[in-house]
Amino acid sequence: MTLSSTLSVPSASAIPRHLAIIMDGNGRWATRSFLPRTAGHARGLQAVKRVVEACGQHGVEYLTLFAFSSENWRRPQEEVSLLMRLFVQTLEREIDKLSERGVRLRVIGDLDAFEPRLQDLILQAQERTAQNTTLHLTIAANYGGRWDILQATQHMLKAQPQLAAHPEKINEQSLAPYLSMAFAPEPDLFIRTGGEQRISNFLIWQLAYTELYFTDRYWPDINAQHLQEAFDWYATRERRFGRTSAQLSQP
Ligand code: IPE
Ligand code: IPE
Ligand code: MG
Image (cartoon, rainbow, N blue to C red):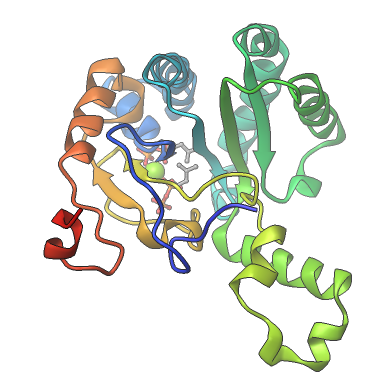
């Protein structure tokens, strides 16, 4: 099981071990260029490739990308369909390359809502890359932080029904193994592109002590240099986890 930032102080290094990103601004990127919003999603995919590559080079171990939120179903049907098609195509076309590079792919979220073909592709891609260890790439799709906490609670109580009779015994460690990101340390750095400064129901449990970085740049414009800027900013943060500055400088 991974360490909790609220139960003990995690070790921190200059490069984030786990980077979580809300890839926002695809639609505005397209609108700015008089293109349909969907063109922005297609271009956003190129940025995903650049960032995966750059994370590999920096030695980031876990990269978690928010691709489709549980609230994104509220978008126009056309846009949702295009996003689903893009997801299918990407899995079909990119999985060989990702696997060769040692990427382990996981998809978190309520996958039942996806069409069977997409669900199959996801399962295949996960199995196919299950032995890889270079970079843990996680795509959050039909994901919501509240959904995650609720599904974890339900699974916990199914597995340990005695906890329902003794709710005082429920603690972080009882719930944590059932959360979708149980396999990973908590994110060190969170990046949101596109100018908004909100979490939009992303990893609400796991972001408890994450450093939050916001940039106005639209996601399709993001490149390795921009990622470097975020890492440089991250390296200047003093991660106190509740302690004082003076305590940190003590040996
Ligand atoms: C993020 O870009 C991609 C998804 C949510 C799928 P948006 O599509 O939200 O782009 P903006 O925020 O409208 O510019
Ligand atoms: C968050 O972006 C979800 C993803 C990037 C997948 P949105 O653009 O949907 O977020 P809100 O609705 O503006 O907060
Ligand atoms: Mg948006």
